[in-house]
Length: 244
Image (cartoon, rainbow, N blue to C red; front, side, top):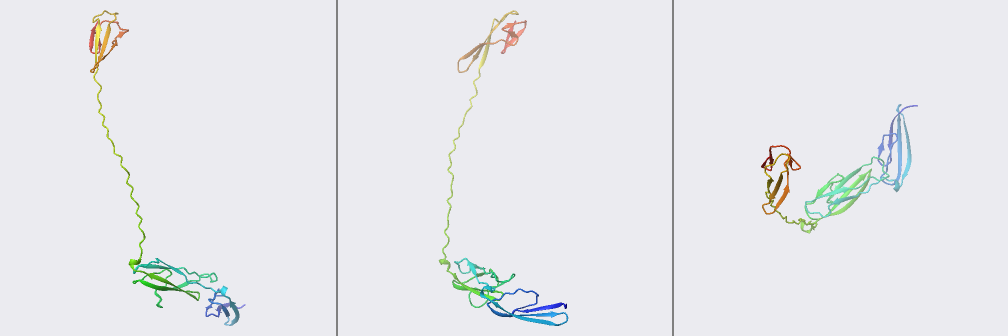
């Protein structure tokens, strides 16, 4: 078997290809003569031609479509155009779109970007045109862009949120004066003053209050047991001395 060294396809619509198994889409319906030329290693060639018919449903087409914002323009304000065209489902994988924008419909191409930005210096109505080319198929769409005078643009209403001020409750300051407790004077009376060991001596304690009144009671010194002194000596009771 002689090796094949090259392929050449002619799809009949002006497009050619050198791949062994190409994929091709036609831009319009019709009947096309598809020719193939195969070149072998020994220099010989083999040619073959067939007719194919392309219906409207099988055409790779793209429809021009775009939006722009904002819609209410002032002179000098930028407007962004968004190209929203995409290859049709009949188009082969990898099909790209060529963009051509004419912002004033004067016949000149102002941008080849998909999403260009433009500004109009004067107010009036302009006709912006998008022309796309997709696998040889051409589609065009024109829309009106209105630029109004600054005084014709209605500003958006401003919503003011009221500021809430918390009510202030007056603070009452209370002053408390602390009065020290009154001094209470204790007085002890010992009867009798001289006693013998084993004898009970009664101590009469009187508590005097400066505002009047008194509190009486009977107390015995730590050396006394049940009010009876057990040994001779001096006994001190609340600053007073008792001699036994």
